[in-house]
Length: 249
Image (cartoon, rainbow, N blue to C red; front, side):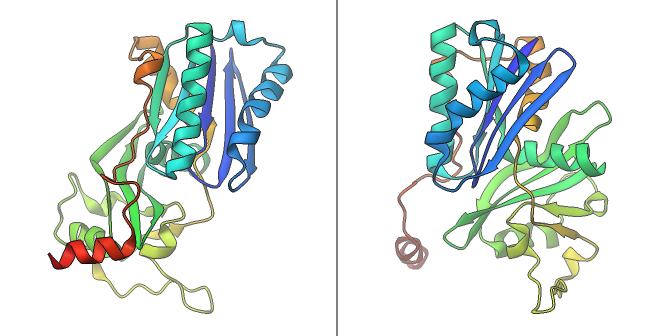
């Protein structure tokens, strides 16, 4: 199986390739450069593996949530590759790939994946990753304010035992668990007691590929036209002032 994966939902541009037993990845911090870097990175990765595009079996992409522009770039690239080579496509949750990364790197099985959504909001999802590498949602992915997430946690609305969740991962962790000037986490909210913030990580294409692989093998794929981003927000152009006005109405 030769599976190509693309991830551009954040400031990082990442591509990965599963080639037999090999796991190859290129990752670069490249704010606003994804469109220029993505396809050359794909070509470089294929060259490293000694493969041509025609030897690919499937393509996966980080379908969001995340940067609107970044999501469109990954989806468009996946669509283009799929159409040109008649390949199946799999869209993988950006938040799930982040949670999977924490299991792969640090054996964290219960993770709150949390990304900065701008406009004073965050994207979040609750995930449990098993020893087989399967990553399952235990609550629907959402977008909202920090207060919205705190309300969910304090009211125990998350399925399963919240006590099992020991880590909040992603750049949204800085918003959920702010630190003081000395870098010490300031946590005066009882429902967050014991949660460890890991904010200096980003979704990677390798985890997109690893989550996509069993779906490809099971035939859980789509055609190019159905390879679409998931934004979570209803409007990609709603300004913070418009949001405040909407709250008052």
